[in-house]
Image (cartoon, rainbow, N blue to C red; front, side, top):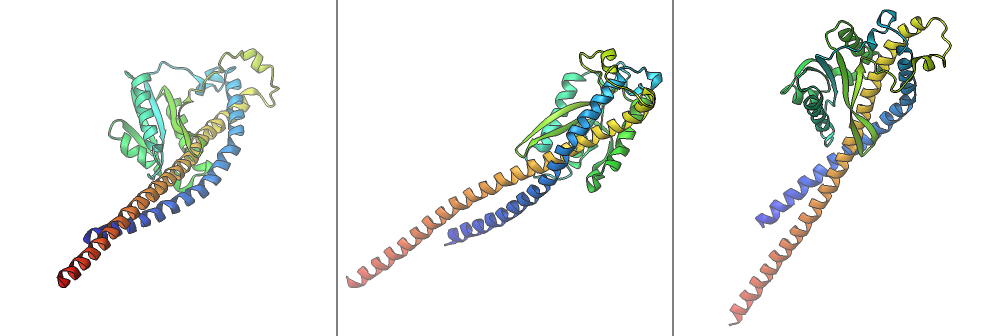
Length: 288
């Protein structure tokens, strides 16, 4: 019977775990819907703004406001890693830490690389391998464009002042609840138009006021939007990954509970059979 008691305790424990994982799944599903709607609505705006930025930057020199487009020899790189503050989301955070390690090994093997960490989980893991100049884990407490803009302004200043020759964002791009795609996206300098013709691009637009005045306002806004989109992408991916992970955990707990119930019933039946045999054996002994 001691064995039966142990099995009952395990079944009770698993049922409690199932309730927790099921509740976390429902919470993440609710948060995912809101985060998914936000990033889906934002992507077209961000893409068009980036396109305009590339078109205009291709026609400017550094003195005319194209400092953020200046291509320099890369001797120092800053990677902005975007992870989550909480765990229980499957391989969401580990995929970013692996992507960072692979990027450094493959692209920047002999180049000095620093990190700016957004997200406590990535900060904890990556700080053991790389130099983290700053952590912005509190951004998730109030994820607004204005708060993200402050981080973007700091990154723009670091590049403009020559502290870093290249800045890249490493984050999970949201595809659906079950799929998150690790991305390494160049933030600064602004990437030129691939295969583009500056004169052809310029002819598509009529500038009012001057091109320089437009770029002066457009570049900072575009870069802030790019960083905000990346964090929003990661935020939606986090909830999708957590919802999927908790769904799998709940299913696994159900399977384990069913197996233990079967084991418990078999053990209980065996115990009852043994008691019946003992009673029958005792009765036969008395008759004899």
